[in-house]
Each structure stands twice: as C-alpha cells, then as structure tokens.
Amino acid sequence: MQSPEYESDSVSDNMRTLDVEADKPAARVASLLRLNGLGSLSRANGLRLKNGDVIVAINGQIFNGNENDLVEALTLDNADARALVTVSRGIVLFDVLTAGPLGGSYEFTEAELANDIAEAFETYQVDAIDNYEPYEVMRNSTRDCLVFSAKPGQLPYVFPAVWLMHNRIWEPMFAVIAAYAFSIVVHPLLFALIYVLTCVYFGRGQVGILRSYGLFHEHNLWLCVAARSVEQVQTICRQIDPRCNFRFSHVGPPAPAEAEEQSAD
Image (cartoon, rainbow, N blue to C red; front, side, top):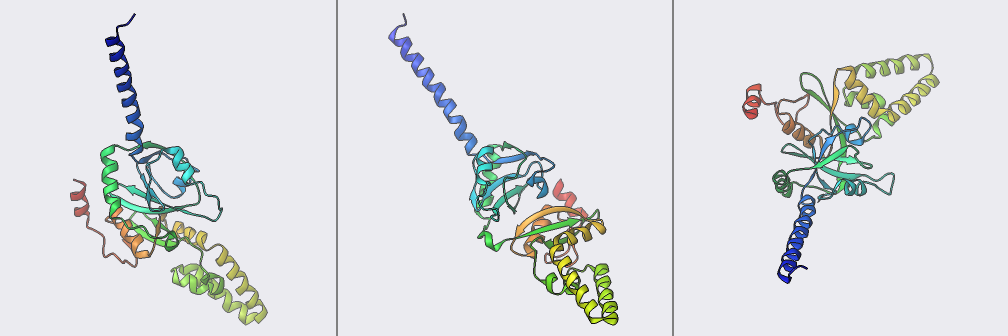
C-alpha cells in the first residue's frame, strides 16, 4: 500500500507529464508549414512553388494550422472562387492565387524561422483579393524574363493583331496580317471569315499562346505570382534573383555578378 506522500508525488509527476504533453501541440500550432515534397500533379508544382517555401497566410490572415487545417482552409465551396496564399521563399514574401488545396507534403518550421517570417509579414501589405491578378514569369538560361498576365483579356477577341503586337509576338503577328491582306484581296467575305476565326482562336487560347511563344524562345515557366501590377511582379523577381533581366524594366538594371557573389558570402 502506497503512503499518502508517495501517492501525492505520483499524482504531481503525472500532472507535470500531462502539462508537458499539452505544451507540445501549442508550440507546433505557433509554427508555420513548410513544403518538403511536391507532387508532379499538385497545384503547388503548377504554381512553381519549391521545397522549402513556407505558407505564411491565407487571404491576409497568418496561418498557424497543421496540414489538415491547410487543406480545409483551401477547400473552396464555389468553383470560381480563389484563395490568396502568402508564401515566403527565403526572406522574400509573395502571393499566389489558388482554386483549391495546394497538395504536396509539409513539415513545421523551426520556431525562430517562424518568428522571423511573422515579423516580416507584419509590414507586408495584403489587399483585397479582387485587386490581384495572376502573373506568370518565364526565364531562360541567361536570366532574361518574360512577364505576362494569366488572366484572359478581351483585346484578342476583338483585335488579334493588336494583341500580338502588344505582347511582342512578332512571327504570328506578321502571319496574321499577311492572312488578312491575302483574304481581303481575294474576297471581303473570306476576310470576314478569317478575321472571326482568328479572333476566336487567339481569344480562347491567349494564355497558352503566350506560354508557347515563351517556350519557342527557350524560356521556361519560373514563377507564378499574384500581384497588383507588372512592376510589383518585377520587384518580387528581382528580390528572388537580383540578376534577372526584363525587356522593359520597371525596376532598373539587374545587379552585377559581383554583387550577387558578395550577398551569397
């Protein structure tokens, strides 16, 4: 038979054990989720997220849940709805738009890293989701980048040649203009038919055409970003890769190679 003193010590020890176990989930909830595995067919892979990217916030609210909570938060009732997910890559914060769970596998970050990211997020501006537009950035081996909006517009439905010129897709533009010139010489009805067909073709396939043109010039999809302007996209790209270059830059020339080596050191 145990003495009262022994029973009291045993109960006390059990309570301390329970308190320690209760503290563990609280410490994990205060952390952030980090990608540590990408499925080839996952949305995370399609959005060009990388292993090591940290999920910081959803629709402007910092996210401290676990993997199941993340799936639940990104499971949207409306098929046309989108969620704005803030991601941290290194010290760079940026946003992506997703129509459902990102997929992949996750782990909790270290508490120190989570605190650093949370501090950076305090000064990070997140607007209403309607103010954002999806952009895609394609980059080649020399770090030249093509930036275009992945949101379909109305211009190619009305003036395909003007849309091609605006996006500097020169070869198809000259082919379309030549087709117009040839058809109008043959018969006005043929011109009208070809014009309607090109409007439908370039209108419906505009995003795919932009991607294909980038691939044709040896650019690969590098980054998907939700942003308010092309300038903001270029700023994010320059933060991730100081030496990336843009044909029409809003952020100045790229950093020299020496500066990148010094920052790496």
